[in-house]
Length: 351
Image (cartoon, rainbow, N blue to C red; front, side, top):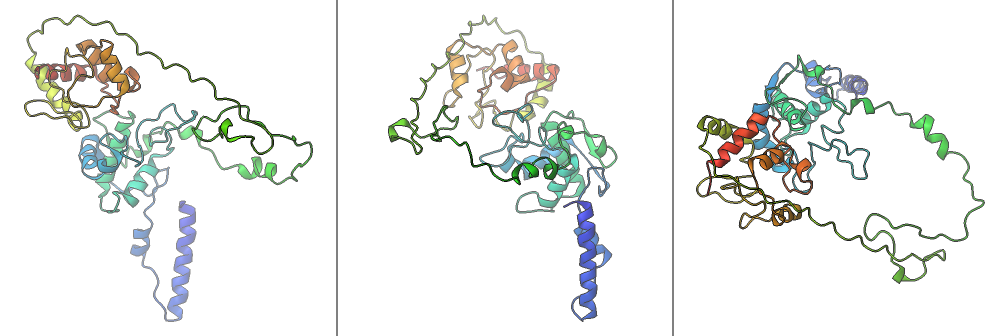
């Protein structure tokens, strides 16, 4: 509800309670009660409470309160909403509307988290908690770096990518006239024929069902295009491993924290959302026992893809860009030095 409508509603509430008080029913709402009810945040920052929160704090709060529904990286679990990614999809057949790709105002993010989240325990978060979670969502959408701290002072400096594509509702001027004129009922076709197949399975009736209503028959379905063969990747020559850079290993261990929710390493490691990564450097892709890989990853491994440091670097920087069919939903590691550290850390767990 907009601030204007809330002011009107608040005035009506005060007026009604005044009338009831005159009749001996109830009492007027106190200013404190009205303030507790009026908690919305406007795009221009009006209503923002004093507070702040950084990405790292937000990540800890996210894992504790939000990841069970929205995933560790805001990628969504089951049928719960995806909140990160989706850039460049809004004009496609299957747009992915997330906080980063679609939402026009950061104030909506803050307002919704504070008002309605976490599910089943709404309004249990402090203002600082909400600032931190909002910062983490910005980070998950690659809109800020991992050292970013959001506060009431810099809140309005954040501009959401899709904000320019929102405009005032003009349907009364542009659409309403088109649907209020008298319908034309002349010059209609005698028969209706199916000239193309629907993209969604089972939408267009099959020809085997006989004549369709109206006399037309569905043409035979087009021959299924042959599946594309997996690209053949030449087997790389893996050199003998050099001595580990222990300083880089230590840095890599810190950066591996963003991988630990899905992957395990070391003695007793088990497959989780992602496979065990012991011995991954220099190994053939898609070959960890007991883990069910995506078809693309299995095909790449069968084609000879080896996880050399160079291939791992390209994959970790942009998993989906490297292999669109991978099951890995992680957004990628942006800093090349962080990637180098993670790979050196993984080298220390050679099988």
